[in-house]
Amino acid sequence: MRMCTSTSNENAHEQRERARAEQEESRIWRSSSASWRRGHHGDSTPRTVVSQRNTDIPYSGDQNGTDSYTELLRGTEAGSLRTDFAMSPMQILTAAVVLFAVACPSMSTVFKRVTADVKGSALLPCTGPAPKGPINVNWKVNGKKVAQLHQGEFTAGPAFESRVHLSEKGIEGGNFSLIIRPVVYSDKGFYSCFSGTERLDDVQLDVVVPTEVSVPVGGAATLPCFASVDRQADDAQLNVRWEKEGKLVLLLRSGLLDEGSGFENRVSMSKDDIRKGDLSLTLNTTRLSDQGGYQCFYEDKTGCLGRVNLTISAHEDTLSVPEGQSILLLLCTTEPVRVEFYGSADQSTAEPVCEVEGGLARCETQYRHRVSVQNGKLELRDASSSDTGVFRVTEHRSNIVVGVVSVSVSSSPHSGQGHWIWGVTLGLIVIVFVGLSIYCVKRRKPKMGTSQQETIALNEQSQPSQQSSDDTGYVDRCLGHMQGNDEDIKTSVPESHHENKDCSTRAFID
Image 1: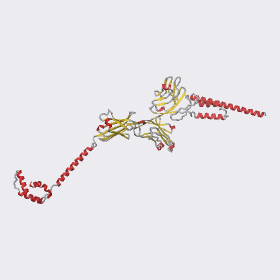
Image 2: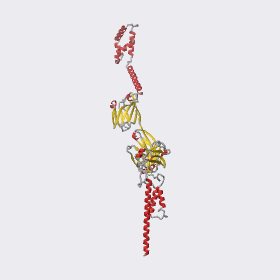
Image 3: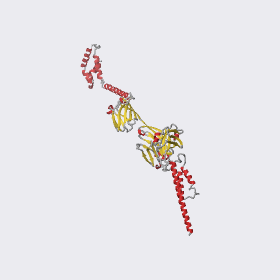
Image 4: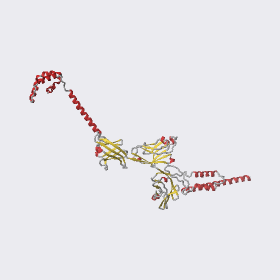
């Protein structure tokens, strides 16, 4: 009986001891966990910072470089957890949680990513509660001082002098953002923002050397970007993202393409080229609004691989138009534009031609009957020498020149070499005509037969040895002789030449 009572008392004692141990372990865990949260964030609520690229990156330690997890581990080692490994299941679970937290201390902490160009400017965002007491704002990079504003006095860290700026007015409203200008390549790093002792934000600054690309409006542009890519990767493993100033241009994910607003049906990438490490973006039919900075990302974790600055220049052209033909001016944009003319005599003064919007043209009086708009072109009919000069197309809202066309109008459709060619041709025609006329006249002259020759000889014998110098007598003798021998002449001259009888006789007499 005693034995049973003793055994029962011992069991009850062990249960009470075990319950006290579990309560003590639970109290230590709650106290340590609360201490860790206060040491890192100043309150008991875990804090999450929104990332611009949704990329999680751990950080270890607080602003003074002290790791609260290490302190917690030391405390537990010195306390109940260090009991010659004679731990209850609850103690083992607690130790596992603590060790996991030490290995992964930033599961709830993310950061912001900012990309800046060399010689450009960078805005490192940081916001928090407006300070109620004296202002004390600190920015650090990799633990080193960047800038500080303390009670109205601003100081910059080494190598940041005259390049960093904080707005005291913005800080009073809870905006602690830092501006770095100009950015140097060595500025890249991990920045932290503090208000007093409270850590507000973390920012990863990437510095890139931009590539400059310039194309005329309406042309095609290739924006270069390269990365190390598995050549054997299938389409589902290709993840490429192009952005323009933070907005989506083109996303290739799991083999599917997603185009950003305003870039529909104008952007493309080659999957075969991507496997070769070429992530370049092709942008067709460029617009003025396409001008700006572009960034390339491969598998979000790698960050920005490069930056391309795209410049859109005016479209330039030179036209030579015959007089009376049409002049075609490329408008280069669907936005409202104005067309102006600069004459060859005075190119400093612009003469308004038309304003075009939505395919409709409102033109000045002297151009109104000559203009039509179709397929993004303005047609100016019946070109004349007064149209020789420069036509300039300017986007109305931005006042940016999008097209410059130099026009030369010839005085006639047949200019230059055409003049002497036509002259030579006309001369040859005249020569041929005259030659043919002479040839035909000669072919019509009659031939003399033997009887005609005998008649002429008889006439010569019957004539006096000396002729009178009087013309009238000569004519009478000629006529008399012709009448006396009329029958002979008729028989000797072919009938087809009777109409030339008198002239022939005169020739015979001579």
